[in-house]
Image (cartoon, rainbow, N blue to C red; front, side, top):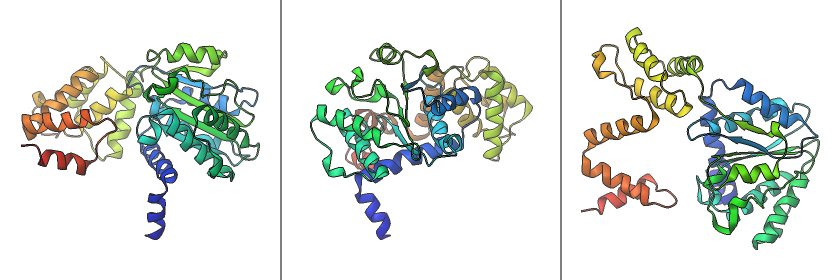
Length: 321
């Protein structure tokens, strides 16, 4: 109990554990993407490649899950060393949402990994950027470092964060940095192409495709101890003929887990794209809990700049006459 309390009081350690927890959850349901993982593995094992690796694609194409899976495989890819891994889902916590606090947290993490004094971390952003780049040089052949930064577009635009001047043009030896982006946000893809001139360091993530989507669904259903009838599979097949993005497949999975084998077939309805599927979900929640409660709860969530906890949401709703 005392150990847990000490961890919860350590902001850096709490941040590390929060992102690793999400990473582990994403890896539990990950399927496929062997070719993409092989490309990331080739980058991580190429000591001569000293540039960033960029993963990009449309929303919902599975960038975050792929980064999470890749980060979990580093120990298999670098068996002859004792690799260190840093994994951050940008924009999912106060410590990962703006460039200043992100770099400070990353510096503290590197100091923790390589036994460096954290008291020397500067507060002024220009010095902080240089300090971060300098700390990367702590990595060695015996203890290499791989940094995964998901969703650069989620960083606050303050201090010109999206110009990416805080990322090195050339990483030190024994260091790899893998980032993911939405290409059309803040001209991030264009900016990164000015920093990275190797074509093999760019990976565009496409949809899963229908065969892999069906296989993923079968594995997920088996893991959840669920099954559906042949007629229900026909409904799923029709939906996946329209879209096979990983997010859409996950929404389909969540929906079919609610189905019963004895349900009338007209009750087993799937939308054909992500937007309509989410609207269908909202409508079901609204029918279950009522228009006022649902709209007010979603409004508070939307208005919360850095997110809102369940207890905070309950407090707000209890004060809402």
